[in-house]
Amino acid sequence: MLVHLGFIPVTVISSKEAAEEVLKTHDLDCCSRPKLVGTKLISRGFKDIGFTPYSEEWKERRKFLVRELFCFKKVQSFGYIREEECNLLVQKLSESAVDQSPVDLSKTLFWLTASIVFRVAFGQSFHEGQLIDKEKVVELIFEAETAQASLTCSDFFPIAGLGWLVDWLSGQHKRLHDVFFKLDALLQRVMDDHMHPGRSKGDITDLMLDVMHKQGKDDALKLTLDHIKNSQETLK
Image 1 (cartoon, rainbow, N blue to C red):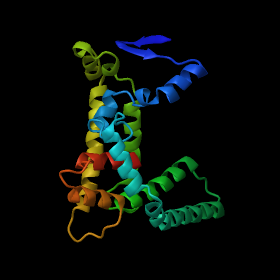
Image 2 (cartoon, rainbow, N blue to C red; image 1 turned 60 degrees about the vertical axis):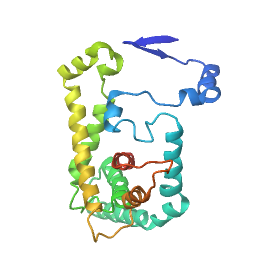
Image 3 (cartoon, helix red, strand yellow; image 1 turned 135 degrees about the horizontal axis):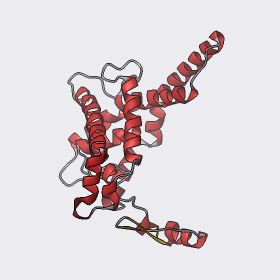
């Protein structure tokens, strides 16, 4: 079934036979995500592997992630971090049980995930990091999710700037850019800290910066600071 969302034609798949055509037979033609205004801004021009259109560039990024970041050896090397954070969570839950105090499990499990990710990716404690305010990070992630999930008229009315005008008048344009600048400022502080001489190295950001500095002109994958920041956002 064909539906027009503003000026954008959308095909609705409503049968298993059609779904097989899309997801299997013509998968390579349909696997790229739509190029939306919000994701383009947050991903710095679709430099995030999650939003990069299927292409040779996407293949090279995927190879890099599998080879350097998510290989068995690398995952195992961070095993002690997962164990320490899980043990800390169990300890806190035990203390709450003894005190008979209520526990917000949603926030607790979010902080567990954030603690692991921040130590693995940034080499900093989510609870004690000097460059990161955990309450502001939680608020920022919520703002980013809300901004990207909200309706952006520019996605459906791209002709003659009509959608952009509506987004500007409604404040959606400002909300997206405010979130982007906050995210960028946070990641830039982390990057500046990692580039400081004499700092102990070993997290994922260090690894990606090292690859970027050593890459040659003929390398298939060209890493930039934007790519690294997008990888950090993906991990968050």
